Image 1 (cartoon, rainbow, N blue to C red):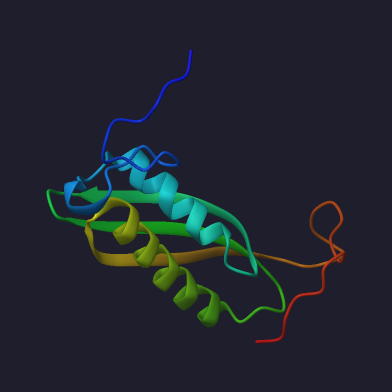
Image 2 (image 1 turned 90 degrees about the horizontal axis):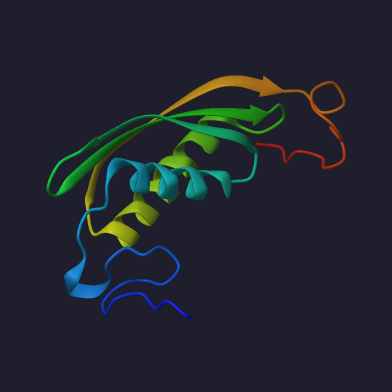
Length: 123
């Protein structure tokens, strides 16, 4: 049996599309934010700390672990922009704030399996 999404939903996310967009629940917003932040070069781990959701706006707090050698301010600003754009596009919500906290830096060759396999970019 094949299940199709209802009319007006994005098959990849199940969230409403177009003019029928509605905010998802906090878990949906957190999932979108984590996926978006994970795409930023230099980000190793992303954890959502808080999602403040109302009818039209959302505020997010994210905690990151990054790789040594990347510019932390650049990563934080890129994560803010990417997450805000992705959450707004997929939920139709206005993103009021994305707060990024960097909890740790991983050192290639010292931290994690295969560390040093990919050289970090200078920033």
